Length: 155
Image 1 (cartoon, rainbow, N blue to C red):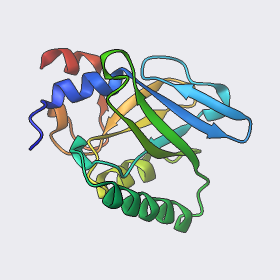
Image 2: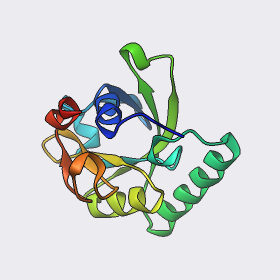
Image 3: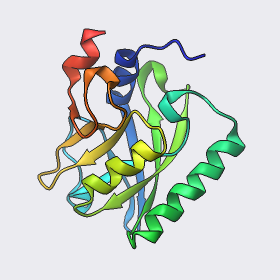
């Protein structure tokens, strides 16, 4: 069982780089930094390791394919992403996901919730990169609320 606190998970998420494979090359975003103009607005979601609990690779790949299918059914574009831990987390994990460009925050939050994720990454039209709660109660937030860095420090 995963014994890492929600606040420790949020701190890890805030220290993560998301690498997005676009037609123009790989673009990188991180919470608290301005995103490249080409990604404004967009959301990043994964189906891997729901609630940050490691799962079997086959389960992760199956759910990833299901997530990609649900994005396609909505007629949305998606770019492959890779979440990569940094600092002390750098060697710990890489987690694939999908970047969905456009004004799609509600859809990406809903997909994150459907796949049991704690949060999604949201890039707003101004380029601000934030984490948005997709599991009610994660770090005391409700679904759709922005998760602030102060919440990570509270743990």
